[in-house]
Image (cartoon, rainbow, N blue to C red; front, side, top):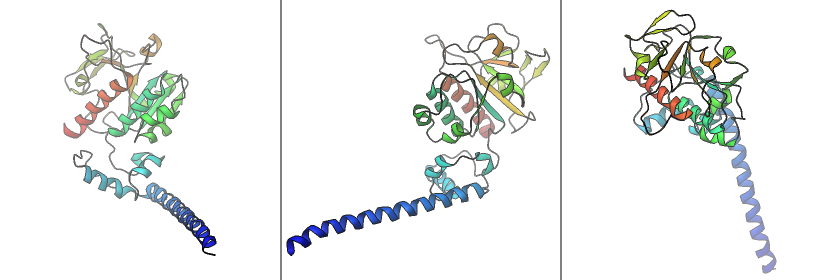
Length: 269
């Protein structure tokens, strides 16, 4: 009798643990469903985007959702629906013929870091939402999920008031500027490459929505950059200065450099 009971007790203990795990899983799913509903329905007054204290950042995240980072990655709605004055909400990033999923993923992560949410893909040469792309988008998966694909650059730019193409080699093009800072200075004067009109700075205004519409930041493919027909659709070209030891930045590094500078300009001046 003792032997029989000793065999049953571990079984009962295992059954009990399985039940506990089941109830825990069901409870977790209920909480996730509720937090997602709360997240989509809540309007949050934005704290300062310049947070240097991690505990304050976590507090702000937890104001939006009860489960912090988990639901932030799960949610598929735009941050501008729950946050006020998203810093770069008038900026869209346009990637032309992207061939490497991690390039798009890394760019999406940087976009989420600097409060830019609009990613547009022109004829991507790969599925950017495969595991490698989504893993490198860590924390910015919502940007990948919300990204839109277009058959042509013209279609993607239809709602944009200014298109800035980032190209390493601008030579003597009168419609080009050297350095990200030139996009922000009021003293900048450049010729509109498509209309020939004189355009004065700042090309990217300090105030949100200062140009009355979307500003497109366009980046060419990883291997070949832009085709001539694509360059012709950019209003202004900008070259990010590089040293002599390497020809150019990677796609994600270039996008990150630009976004970081624009974010700093609007938040710190």
